[in-house]
Image (cartoon, rainbow over all chains, first blue to last red; front, side):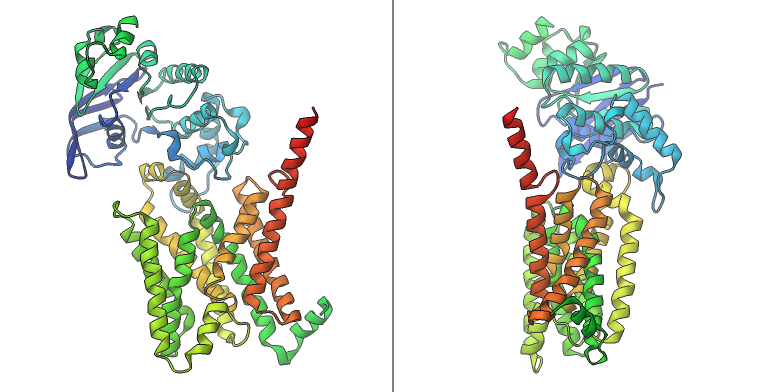
Length: 239
Length: 289
C-alpha cells in the first residue's frame, strides 16, 4: 500500500476552488516531483495534506500519522537566536505536549535527524550563520525529527546554486530510500533527471508518470499553457 | 549622594516609600526583561506600545471609582489585546493597522474618563510618567505574585512560544493552538506592563520591555542566555536609575529609561562579537592580512 494516498481532493481558498479532484499516490522508496506553474495549487496541495487547510472533499491517507513538512525557507525566522539542534527539536514540540521537556529519546531522534542530513558537525551553530543549503538541511532535519513515513517539501531548491542543488537532490534521493518523498520544484531539468515520477499539476493532476512516460509535449503544454516554441519544451526534448 | 547615603535613606523609616518603590521597580524590570525577549524577537514592539497605552483607560476608570488600579489596568489591557488578536484574523487588514486603531482609541477613552474625575491633572501626570510615592503595601505583594505567575507561564509555555515565533505555519501543522498562544503572550505583555506602570509610567514602560531584551540580543546568539541577561540588565538599570533619580531629584521613570538607553548604546558599541568596536577590529585585522 502507498505511504501517501490522495483521492478526489478538492480545496477552496477564499471561496474560490483552487484544487479539484486530485488523485495522487507516493510509495515508500519514491521521490516524486510536483510540477506546475505559479498559482497551480502546489503549495495548497501540500498544506491540504498537512491539514493546514480543510479540504472540501476527498480523502487523504498518510501512513504513520503526520507527514514531515519542509516549508519554503522564507517562512522561517532565521534571525532568531537559536542553535541548529534546538531548531530540530522544535519539530517535536507538538509531540511532546504542554509542560513536557525533551527527554533522552527526543534528543536521540534529533541527533539521528542531523546525522541523516549530514549536519551533525554544525549542531551547536546559531542558525543565522548558516548558508542557504545548510538552512534547507536544518528544515529537513526538523521534519525528520518525528521520524515520518512521508516527507513533503515546498520548493527546496529555490535560491540555491547548482552544486548545492545537486547535493540536496542526492540527499533527497538517499532519504527516498526509506521515506515517501513529494517535493514541489520549478527546476524542470533537475526534476526530470532526479525524480522517480513526476506529477503535473494545474488545479488538478494533468498527468503523472515516470520522466520517460512524460516525453509527450501535450500534458506539459496543458499544464503550463505555453506555446510550441517554448524553451520548456526544448528542455523536455533534451532531457 | 554616595551609595552608602542611598542605603541609609533606604533604611530610614521616614522614607518607607523608597524601598517599596525600589522593590517594585526592580521586580517589574525583571519581569519585563524576560517577557521583552519575545517582544523583541517577534518584532512585537508596536504591540507592547499598544498594550501599554491600552492599560490607561482601565487605570482611569479604577481611579475614578476608587477601585484597584492593577485590576483595572489588567482588564483594559487584556481586552484590547484580545480585540487586536481577533481583528487581526481578518486578512484584509494588517495587524499593525488593527493595533493603530485600538490602542489610540483606548488611550482616548482613558483621557475622556479621567477628565470627568475631579482633581485629575496630578493623577494624569502620575499615570503617564510614573511616581515613586504612594505605592500601597498590598501592591508590593500583588506585583510579586503577578510577577511570579507571569514568569511561571513563560517558563511553562516557552517551547510553544519559540515554535510559534520561528515558524507559525509549522507550529499550526504540529497542532499547536497558535491563536491562543498569541492571546496568552499578549496577556503576559499586559501583565508585565501593568505591574510596571506605577513606578515608570504609562509612556515609558515600553523601554522596560524592549531595551533590556535588545541589549541582551546584542550580547548573545543563545536564547537561554538572552532570557537571563535581559532581566539582569533591566533590574540593575532600575536600581541605578532609582539611585540617580533620588540623588539628583530627577523624575524616576525618565531616569531609569535613560540609564537603560546608555547601557544599550554602550553595548552596541562594545559588544564582544557584534559590537561596533569588535567589527572595526576584525575589519582592520583582515585589511592588514
